[in-house]
Every structure is written in C-alpha cells, then in structure tokens.
Image 1: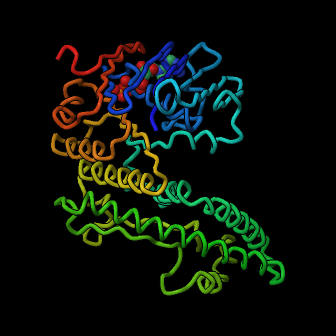
Image 2 (image 1 turned 90 degrees about the vertical axis):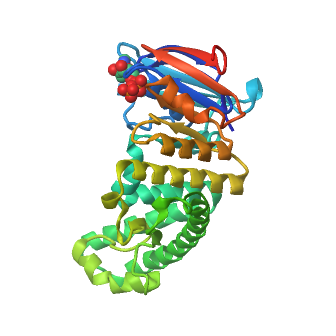
Length: 369
Ligand SMILES: Nc1ncnc2c1ncn2[C@@H]1O[C@H](COP(=O)(O)OP(=O)(O)OP(=O)(O)O)[C@@H](O)[C@H]1O
C-alpha cells in the first residue's frame, strides 16, 4: 500500500498542495515552520480523519478558512482507491472512500495502515501503560478480527461492573453475570494479545538482538493481574478492594508491556538516542508482523529523522525501513542529512520535496546530483 497522490487544501500553512509521492522513499526538507510536519499530518488525516499531533481539528484548519480538505489516492498509480477527508470549523466532517461516504473511521483506516515515528514516540517508553497497551492492541486489532468485538464486550462489562461497585450496595445476582462475561472476554483478549506479543518479540529480536543496546534489555507482557492467578481468581480476590475503590482494579484494561534494562525502566536508563532507536525497532517490528500476517505493508511517517539520532543510528533505521520495502515519508531540516543514509542503500525510487512557507516543490533523485 502506498499514497500515489496527495492533494491538500487549507491545512495549517499548506494552502494548495498537489504531489505525487514515490511509492518508496519520500524525503521532505525545509526550514523550521515551513510545513513539513503538516504534510505528514495530511497523510494521517487522510486515513485516520485526524492529526497525530492533537485530536483537535480547529488548529489544523488554516486561519481565516472555514474548511480543510485532503484528497489522496492509495494503491498503485492512478488505479488506486480515492480517499477524501474534509473537516470544517463548524464541526462538519466528510470522510469518503471510493467516492462514497465511509461507514466508520475504522473503514477509512483500513485502506492505509500507518506507523508514525515522531517526538511523541518516546511516550512508548516514558508514557503510561495505556500507550504501550494501545501499541500492542493496534497490531491485535489489525490481525485478529475477533479482538475488537471481544474488547468492546469486555469494556461494556467493565462499565456495568464499575457502576454497581460505585453504588456500593453490591448484590451478587446482579454482579455475577457481568463478572462471568468479563472473565470470558478477558480470556479471549488475553489469548489474542499473547499470540501477537510473541510474534512481535520474535520480529523485534531479529532486528534488535544483535545491537549492543540489546544487552540487558527485557520486554515482557503484563496481563493486568497477578501472574500466579487466573483472571477469575484475580477478580475474586480483588473484590473487596474494588468495592472500596469503586472500580475494577485488575483486568485487560491494566495490561502493559514492561520494558526494562537490567531490571530498571528503559526510560530511566537509556539515552534519548537509544530510546528513539528502541522505539523505531518496535514500530518496524510491528510493521513486519503486520505484513507477514496480512500480506500488506504499513506506510511509515517519520517526523524529523535526524532529531536525537546520530549518523549510525539513522543508518540503522533506514536499513530497517529499506528491508521492509515500504513507502516512507521522512522529514528533516537539512536535505543532505536526510539523503545521506539512503545513498547507496536503496535501489528504489527516491523523491525529494522541498517545503518553503507551505509551498512544495519536488525533485526526483538523482536529478541534479
Ligand atoms: N491553523 C493554522 N493556520 C495557518 N498557519 C498555521 C496554522 N497552524 C500552524 N500554522 C503554521 O504552519 C507552519 C507549519 O508548521 P509545521 O509544524 O508543519 O512546520 P515544520 O516544517 O514541521 O517545522 P519544524 O521543522 O519546526 O518541525 C508553521 O509556520 C505554523 O506557524
């Protein structure tokens, strides 16, 4: 899967953009504030209906304009699927695929699986368990069709159970069916997550295992309750605490990926550059597993590649992306720093885009080199 055409109107400082990206390597350079990240945001918007920077829509719409639109073709050349998104200041939105409104944002997302590596990527190490849980669940959601219904059903049970807990007067006949259903759905969610986590770790070790950085590194899946107990036992033994707290303290909603170096949190031990490379490896590993299972490739958006990564680490990430053979959009301030790691390392088509005050010009490498 790749974006073969991208047309953007009134997104931040991008007033009128129409580009035909390479199905392989797209390098986007320009000064600070020129509009590079906005271009990546437009790809994100096209498939997820929102930015990766913020859930708010108004800041995305160009000042003094009522609406922003992004149109794109996804697939091979002009034969690709047309996708269109418009978001208006007054709250109106249109999401279209193949010329008709989509049934859900999940349908829109299914046309173009995306992986984003940007400054927020560090939150995979520093952030709350929710960030890591969502990271794993992205994969589970995309490769296991029964996961989402199970997850939704479990969420429903949790909500009802918590409402009963908050009321304080617990009646067993009222609570029992929610507990039973929660246990059944949690076991399914857990099985899906374990299977995906194992595949993810296999792929991650193949990428990362050889690096010095891998010394002492350990990633493990925390299920969301004591590993000595099954979920039914954990729920039962936590009942009094749940009543006191007014919510369910154990379960699928507490799962986490624990990332440690010699027993300490990786975020407390690794340098920024090391953290970024580790996060990149996790995202590339995820893309690999996704491809193996679905036979489809993710598109990678890498905002400000040089930030935090030295030459060797940039080269490492580029070699991983190249091995994936996927479409990438990579931004940076300096053209040479963006191009350098690819030179001699890819036979695929490179396009270089220069952004200046929201205007984009493109060149096919190696023209003019
Ligand atoms: N709603 C808006 N309307 C008009 N311009 C906007 C709006 N929101 C942001 N901008 C401007 O659009 C420009 C695009 O910013 P963007 O973050 O894409 O730049 P960038 O090239 O990625 O910069 P950096 O290298 O600093 O990360 C900025 O100059 C910003 O001030």
